Structure formats: C-alpha cells, structure tokens
Amino acid sequence: MADKDRDIEDSEEPGVVPSRLDEATHSEAMVLFQDSANSIFFSKAQQWKPVGATLVTFLAIIALGKYVSSVESFILNLKLVVILAATAAIFILGIYQFWQHTESK
Image 1 (cartoon, rainbow, N blue to C red):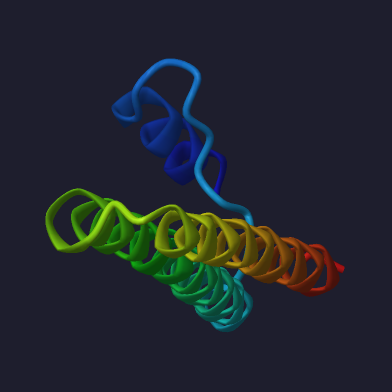
Image 2 (cartoon, rainbow, N blue to C red):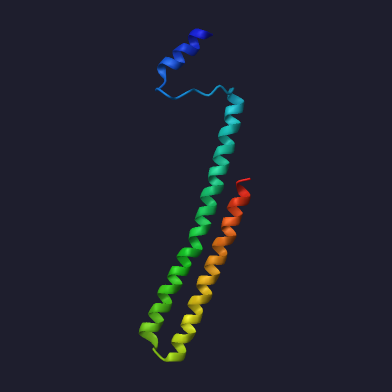
C-alpha cells in the first residue's frame, strides 16, 4: 500500500495532492460543485440581462430625443423615464445580490 502511495506522489506535479476521498464521496463532491457552479452561472446571466436591457433602453431614449423631437416637455419626460429605468435596474441588481448571498449559505 505504501508503494502505491509513493508511486502516486512521484507521478503527480509538485504541490498537487491527490484526493484521499473514496470514489462515492468524490463523485458526490463533484456533483455538489457542478451544481453550485451552474447556480452561479445562472444568477450571473440573470444579472446581466437587466443591465443590457437598461442600456438598450437608454440608447432608444437618446435616439428618441435626438431624432424624434426636441420639445422641452418631451425631453423632460424622457429624463423621467431614464431616472425610473436606472432606479429599476439598480433595484433588480440589488435583489440579485441578495439572492447570491442567500445561495452562498
């Protein structure tokens, strides 16, 4: 048994220690790791969607202000829409941050 351990240690890269877990426990740990990684990837994708949607909304508002009308009341309404969209995006991102914090526990 000691010869087998010595052969494994000799064949590995320096600083890399093979897992001492049995195969069933190692498989369980790998499934848990993959599950948590998928959850993080999903939540990050969810976070980027409102950011992208808000940026597209801002570009549309800029185009409306530049090419449709430059009447003062119309521009004021567009400014209000920008403030509401930014507030909504920040609120949604805050919710996602709390969600990630809850998932990490």
